[in-house]
Length: 214
Image (cartoon, rainbow, N blue to C red; front, side, top):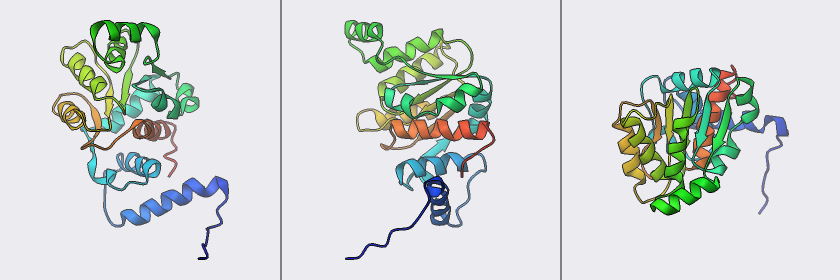
């Protein structure tokens, strides 16, 4: 069988991918601020289900972009999500990405209390100065703890990106988030992941820099 490959220059691959995504979305319409986020997630996952399952609280993208422009800290629940965030552009705004999951003190406390490191990591967010975005793509325990802290007024994130993936308490943690009076972007259902959390953050980072990279 002969396979016909497209000849695309390396610098044009992303642009071509976005053209394909736009074509396959067809005549569907989305709010202008949400569309770059949806397309970035589809680009990362090749999964068009996210066009239906990504949920946004009112003004969520605008709030996230403003936080990035204000030099926010993006706190992730995994090193994978941390690695996927475009820190070079984020740092131009005076912001940074953090992940405490590998901190020995976090690991020790989690073991002592019988909870996950991801949950303890969220408690470390209370000490962060300035605006904070939580980007949670793996651990529902992190999302649940973040919701508990926010509900108690101990944590006031500018935005929670709640896209954990899996089966145990994943759907429930997202529903908990979406029932709260907290700005959020969530992926309804079981799908998500660290790559999705990073993609959502990157979409907002590119919007903040005036380049949606579509």
